[in-house]
Length: 114
Length: 110
Image 1 (cartoon, each protein chain N blue to C red):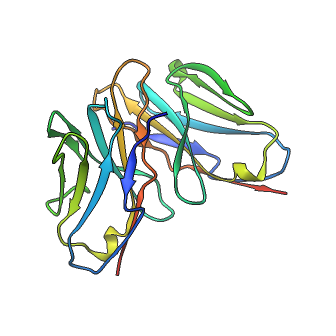
Image 2: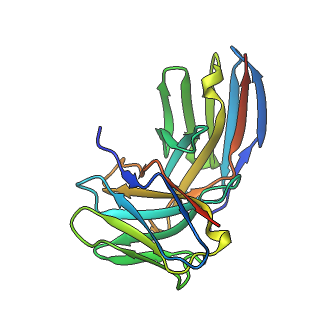
């Protein structure tokens, strides 16, 4: 079964540094998402992306965040200047939005900001 | 926006016991999914179930869309069932995003 792939599985960075989290969605999917889960808390929506532009973003997704689909397969989340509170698990998801189509999630990237 | 409430927040079972997890939501939904988050943090999709009943092995789920709730049944629980179970819904406002509940943390003891 095709799956969403995320790299790296774990990223450690220093406060103030830029990080790029990478995702390869399922190949025929057109809708892409990033979610965040702070340790011990629920999974929160960050942003959705369709047709090469942001469809919707949450209050969490401020100016330090950006997303990009640089080629036909990758979907990236960039955090420009990381803060301690950005430490979390980041999940990428994709969907083809057809009838009876769930969101498929990747295994996540655990970001630790020190 | 749509609200999602899960109960109970925590559940401890003896291996072999059955359990029912509940998810209430505040508005009509296009999509509802149940996930199991394992100890490594991975979200495992269990069911896509905006309405009706589905079964997969020892797990089954029922969503009563008109009454705005969904139930996840775990029968003959095993220690590997431990983890957090999340319900997530997509509202009918066509926002195409899932909103997650706070989860039920399940511990199955041998």
